[in-house]
Length: 464
RNA sequence: GUCCCCUUAGACUAUUGGUUAGGUCACCACCCUUUCAAGGUGGUAGGACGGGUUCGACUCCCGUAGGGGACGCCA
Image (cartoon, rainbow, N blue to C red; front, side):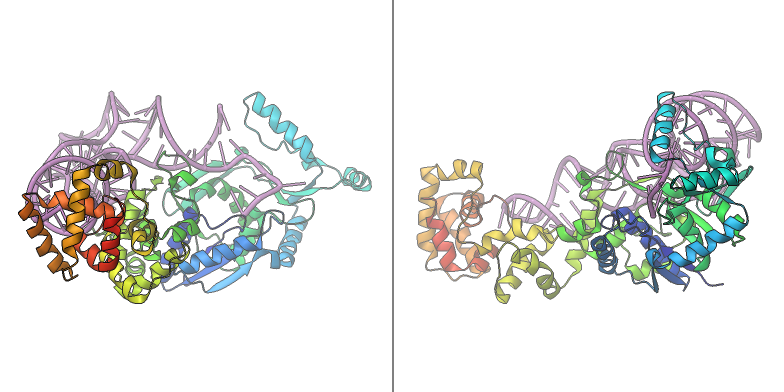
């Protein structure tokens, strides 16, 4: 049987960067084996699921270049779940539970107080037909719970080997809510079985759900899939990823100007290896080399440094033309709409200095503005010095007669400082400050050439 | 607290009982140099701890410590 895997996000938030990695591993596995990658939206939580989140998830997956072969939405499959619920009912595997949320909350609170683990106590598991009738007559709502069998449940995990659970640590969990909508633990099983999912690759946060799900497989006589629980991504502080780690949503990263190639490459490297010391992998290369055997067991820290390095690397691989298209939106949001020639010249200078596309604004904004903002400390240091100002004045004066290409500018400038008995840096730094407002930039003479004579002469006069 | 999982440098990883424990990011130094970046060269830094098993342990087993996850009418 050919491989079929799925990514099953719930649309209760934007696609999480960790979720994207889970999707990636599934995608790589499917493509590596020539199997199918299925996308299934798990939207049974009707109060929290939002269409906009589903759209964000689809958009993020597309941005990462992951295409899916089949698409499902659990909310559209309700009939199927109730059909299987009937089977469980007639097999006596489930029961109605009339406990209210308030009652359960109270029990949980008490357990917490006594430092005892909470587990549903099975209060309603032995209700007689008559008791049920009476409760229903009172108009009491109920959920359906699954009756856990005694014994032990073993997960044969492709990443971790055998993981075994004593069923007495499991409680009778809810299959359908009081409004009749089935819950996650029920729907996943039905869907995975009916969709012929062969391998379930998901985050290790699902390990503890797996024994419950396995019980449903057994009760319904479904064939068990293979499981591979992958380690989670954690933040620099070793806790869950948070906003401070650079964003939790894929769209945070796309928005900041990380390239999909870099993001995919980086995520693929977290918690997995590919049989060589190479760090740079295209999607195609990842597909070729991916293997669950190479997935690690321990959580991986999301290392911004490495992401930035990879992203800078991929930016440098882009052609100037590609970069023009990529960078334009980042300038546009700042109201900058450069002409093609100017943009091309700026890209040449900034390309190898960008860690992310969004850096273009900070790095090169001065090329496109009429109102320079000067670095405050640097301004004090250089432009409160009459000697420096006089020097700038002379430089500007002589510059009027110089051809404005970087080679001529450099020859002239070197001659100028030599004549004055100065070092090159004595003129370069104040000039850079006057032209860019900053102490760091691309090569000064290239900057001058790109800025053009008029602007350069004008800006050299401004500090006075 | 209970259950489950994990543990090679600051970070990601290689190693599958015999290696001078390898690579990458970060960091440091030097080169290049007008600053930054890029590039080049070199460097600092690692098997959590304690017991076993074995001729030999990073690798296997046990314990401890630390970390992560789960404990919902969320997924």
